[in-house]
Amino acid sequence: MQLFTNDPAIIAQATQLLWIAVLLEPGRTCNIVIIIALRAAGDARFPVVAGAASMLVVMGGGAWFFGVHLGWGLVGVWIAYTLDEWVRGSMMAARWFRWGWLPHAVRVRRSARGAL
Image (cartoon, one colour):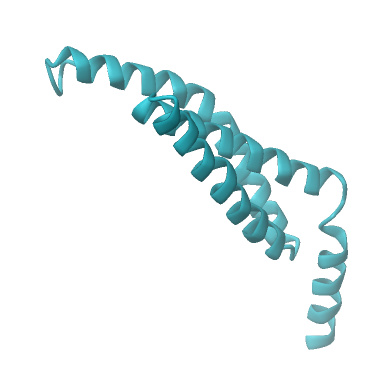
């Protein structure tokens, strides 16, 4: 950090955010990979709707709660961001492992077969 600044407050804040990012990345990776798999299977609507709802409720509400209400500032916003990624990743994983995407894949395959 000292390559960029010598301000101890900025270094302390950045250190906290980097540790939060360690927890963030597995959730975000799961989220991204499964969303791409769902889109490839023809199920694009669920990730969009579920993702928008999660971002509004978990990220928006969480950022206010942790960042403003509890007074945690940027760290609180990043905690809400981390929770949002994990919630969305969990919703996408549940959709994938419960075969919720299968009817969409069958419909897409039938329409593609009919186009040939």
